[in-house]
Length: 386
Image 1 (cartoon, one colour):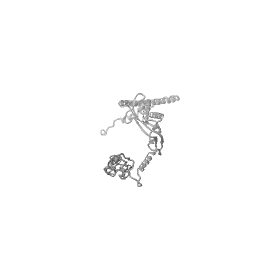
Image 2 (cartoon, one colour):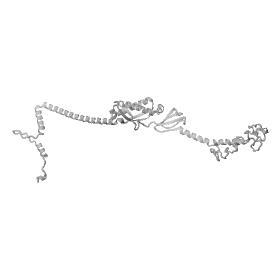
Image 3 (tube, rainbow, N blue to C red):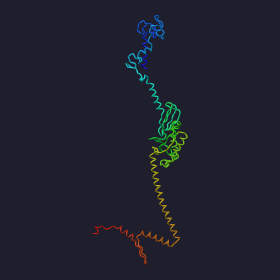
């Protein structure tokens, strides 16, 4: 633009040099440079105004003053040049688009190629397997949904295409790394709980246009469902893991029901509790309580084991007594003597006495006891024997 303005200024300057009056009136130099040549248009010596629209000013034999077209033509096929000698810059030729061999310009061809490339890039869309795309009209109004494969739409900005992977399972960690989230249990205790939400896109159209921020809605619904589920459990079941599976199942079902009611287009695949700890400020007290609870459980288990042994022994003695009683009812005398002999055997096997009866009864010698005593007596050393 600067070059064209300079060229136009040079042309006007040449026009002004044709005479003091741009229309040729008054005395001055004509196109042939002769002084005193009246301008064109019939002014003559009277100095009257000339008609600039008539060749020669209406007077035969006189040349008209140079017009803008004449100035441009006089500069050659490259157009007017600057006063310094160049058209496009100081001392250099002006910029011109290259011409084709037939003399026509390449500008339409260049613009046509750019238009074709623009149409190809913005009209053909390759949707990968597992993906879907939504098409909007002028970037706002929903137009349609594209499945996997090659699809054709109107060029941008008429149609805008946004692709999303609808099969990928996405993870949301709540509350995030190194962040404490306290939740109240059913027995009025606080726990620091973190969990994962696994989800994917079930309906891309609803996901894009139904909710303003689907991900934020998912997190808010998950937190509300988790707090409600933990509030139905006591502290021990939450900390020990006995109620975690039930909490995870309740949270997933509650979240899915609420998301379906909002028509969010989101499918919750699962909930996984990562960590359940007491609050950091009372963690030491919780550890002491947990240690005492473990000791109490250990003592209770030992007591139950002893009680089971005593009960089993008592049940065995009762069963043995019942069996003996049944035999006693069948043969009282024989049973009585057998019981007497077994009792005496148990008693005499533990004594050091020798019982000698009169008559032809062989006396009882506690041979096992004598043998035991002989083995327990110290043996003389070999030196003492020598």
